[in-house]
Length: 580
Image 1 (cartoon, rainbow, N blue to C red):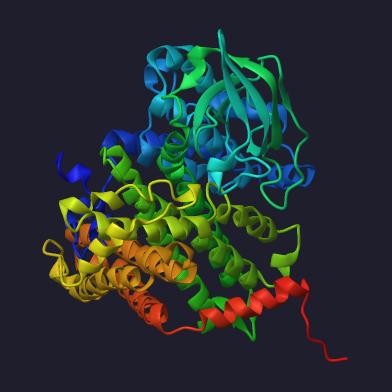
Image 2 (image 1 turned 30 degrees about the vertical axis):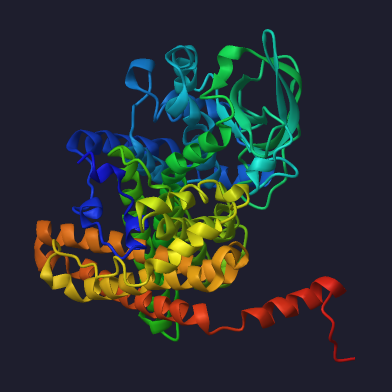
């Protein structure tokens, strides 16, 4: 098992290998966790279930009332991942994701407030804190006496996190912190900040992480941001003006802040994924009720094929998202060393599936969906941020694809280690491939491309497995072909990288759905699992179609024409044609 924990399913897949022991059997919560979560679910229904009008009102006002935040604190929602000995529930990633799913069924602003605290705000303390740091802050964070926020983004440093301008200069008695952070979730209500600052002028990206508290002189908070969605959650700027941070508040190793930030984001992605699933389940409930109740042409619209198509796809997307987020949470809980690609995939897929579901739910509600008295328009506004939160989906797609490029070079031979690590910090600028490593990567054709196969799944799901296996072989060949075609220029070939990433996203999600259905089939039998088998068959067919199109588009496309048209618009800064 220790060797297995060093394996990345997707990195192996890009070499043509299906590491089925990583994803089989499908992970499940133990009975103690299930019982605890059932209690959380029932209690949350009592706390949040009758507040629909309040959530609508608070969205319009753009703020969660202080007394409501106190209720969330008393309920224990800020202690979900903090160890029990410090007053928390001690949830692992799977249980935490499932709990946040329940919160998100009721209100996105509440889910974001709770999630930003546990997923990223104090996650660095959980992962990298010293015993002394944890004993100092855990109890207050568990009760919500201190709410946490994650301070990475700056006015000129969004996806390019390594270019931050905030500085921390070492002093005799600590670090002098100066700079500004932008769009900080929980900024206006937090007392505990995980702050990233540049700690060296030697080279790019030498940053460190610090624990900063609101009571330190020089910390100030900007006004509440007026946002499109999740309006009631607190989003502000945070300013640091000659803040003296004690040496004991350095989080993790000096100059390792970039890796710390990426580890925090990877570890916390199941929170965003869980929130997306909760919102999707709520949308399915709203849509099915609406479709059953609304009549047109003398019958419920739920009887019309195009409405069935919308709801059926929403169910498929939700099932696949839950399978994927659950799998990534399990990789974290089981102690896998590298699941960064899988975590990024879960974020991209979950956020885009939620966006599609919100759009279709509003469409099913038709005119009602567009009216503010109904929940649909708010759910659409609230869901849009997830494709931007915690790394934009565009940047994450580049990370997913370029990680595959990394491994094609690095795993061919021991000598190709010159390529290893080139893409470890993709947001930092993606690095430069060495000429020698590219030469080694050209030898990939025909190596380790024997057809990977599933050997441990139920034969009744053979057809989806064959689709997966065939695509796996094509993926390994395509990765090598892209590298050989573009060489070190692959960094700038974002269309090719996007297509490769979309293939990888589809395949990992399909693997998770195969695992989930296989486990259900064995546990419940074919009759009880019939609808899940149907979900798998439809999803595998959709994946097959999309993957074929993306493979074809790697070599046959009009990408240069699209870019030329865009360049024309950039030069003119307008649409250049008119009919008058």
